[in-house]
Length: 283
Image (tube, rainbow, N blue to C red; front, side):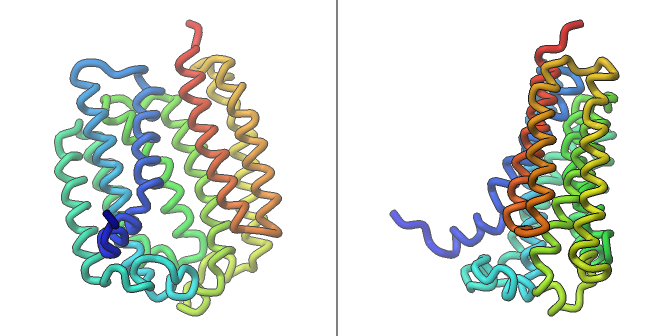
């Protein structure tokens, strides 16, 4: 049975791969903080994962609502530009998803609720307030990407040093990826009068800024091993992850579309390295 175009469009609005991926990162944040959760912590982690998936899906949907005119240029195959979903339907859908995320988050420890409130405000205001400011939108998205790890750790009541380092490394890497995406989207962003970093200072200079941030993150990536919070197995995966991200950075100067996709692969491999390092840590 063929799925109706409207239903398919709503699913596409959520970017299900990104939403589920964010849920996985929330679990990793909890795992590096306390290991495999047990008892009430297990329930809290499950709730945090659900809240993350719903909030990410809602953020993606509302971003498409606000970006519908830009997407008509940069991504005409998105659900709203191709008329699979009406703008008002997309907005209502995002509100429902946000409501579900908030309902789940309110059952978590206070620290997790605080992070959820900050993230909700950032998701709702991102496109209208921050996206068009040079670098500001990139920083907001970087924080949101890294905060999934903080949220997972906070759901079990602790922000361990390892979770904080993971947040910082992920946030910086995400800022670089977002700068590369802005280079990719220059045509539509300029048409809409946005002043993203590549438009404000030039595409190659923006990539150089993103590159400097990524190199700093790569140089800092051995810290969890140096601190003794993750075992040597962590290095087994984080070194190739760093290499992939650096390759993707160089690639972005010629092909930003391929570069931002490949840097994402490196970021997920880096997240997996924290799991491996925590799993095989020898005390």
